[in-house]
Structures are given as structure tokens and as C-alpha cells.
Image 1 (cartoon, rainbow, N blue to C red):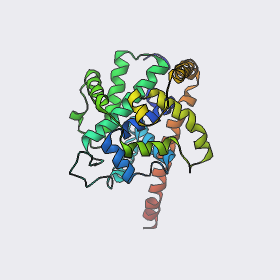
Image 2: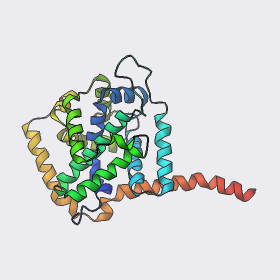
Image 3: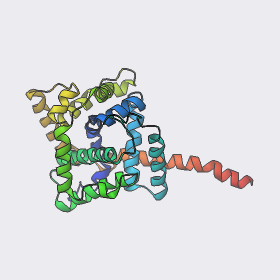
Image 4: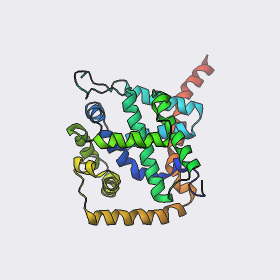
Length: 272
């Protein structure tokens, strides 16, 4: 990789694509229904986003202990997330490998899209490395390695096949509206939502903008392209410490939690 894109996995600019990845997931009818019925995403969007990214960072950068902990957290969260509706294709089970594949696919494709918008196309070696890294996000849980498309060409075929039929239904659209138009969250979160909503709309396929009720026109398209060009010039000039601050923060918080959990055990051992 060229200088500046060597460690794309921890780049804070990937947060610009968080809304896109989430809405792509919600556009899957089973995921949209499962989240609507079982998730507190709209009540605690920041906590849920931090939890997801902590998982990503730990799988890529973390120690064995950190990886074990985030896997435990995700598995615990997934246990109650299932529907008993077996009569239709809309039944939901968080352990379904097809749904896990789609979730990881949205994370990978969104990260690739953002990185290439900022740094330009990746060379083959860098692109293959990125693809392998994102495969770990699913296989670290229950996704069988054989489910992940064998290479980037196979992934492209899978992705296009999914997008060609993907349409958001009422349940997923309702969750998305709660995330994009929050009413009962901190003021600072409501302040950043308009630009986040704009970037999300610009990064989504056209049919999903319509499904999620996100207005778009040629003027917005020009503004979006101009915004991405400015980011492509300005962002890579930032110090690495700033570009990776959120990754470092999440891993520090995870390590604090692990130490706090270990402390009572250590103290009990001393008393014994």
C-alpha cells in the first residue's frame, strides 16, 4: 500500500459510511424485522455503533483475550434475537449464516467504498489483504469460512446479485427513520445527524434512497461529490493519531473492561 493507506482498517473516516452499512443491513427484510422486534438500536445508537466497531477493531487488532471478549459480547446479544415465524421467509435468526454473511458484506463493501473515495483505487495486493481481513469478522463468529466468497470477483457477483433484489420493507424503514431522525438523544448527536444523513444518502444505491425516504437530486449529487473531493484532499493530511483515534479509544475502553472484570477474581484469590 502507498503511504497513508497502509492501515486503512483503523481509519476514523470509515465512520462516514456507518449509516450506509446499517441501512444496507436493514434493507434485508429478515434483518429489518429482527432489529425492529429485538433491538434497542434507535434508543442507544451511539452505544450500538461503538459496540460494533469495538468488535471490528478487536478482531483485526486485538489480543486473544480481547477477541474472546468481543465474541462473547456479540454471541450474548444474539441469543434472544430470533423470530419464531417459520411460515415465511421473513423469519429471523441472528445466527443464520446467510444473514451474517450479508452483515459482514455490508461492512466490507462500505469500508472499501470509503477508502477508495479518499485514497483512490487500491492495488491488488492491498485490496486482497483488505478482503481477507473482513472475512475474519464473520468467521470469528459462526459464519463458515466456506460461506465467504472465495475472492473479490466472487464477492462482486454475490454483491450485485443481492443489490438487484434488495428493497427495504416497513420494519427496516421504520428503524432507519428512528436512526436518521432521532428525537430523544443527546443534542450533540442530533447536531451531527444532518451531515451523517447526507453522506448516507449519497453512498446508498438509488433504489434504497427511495425506500428509506431520503431526498436526492442533481444538486445534492454535486454537493456530495464536492464534499468527497474535499475529504480526499484534507483527510489523508491529518496525523495518524487523529485518523486512528476512535480505534485506539475503543480498544482502550475494552482493555479497561477486561481489567475491571479480572480485578474481583484477583482479589478473591488474595483473600483465599
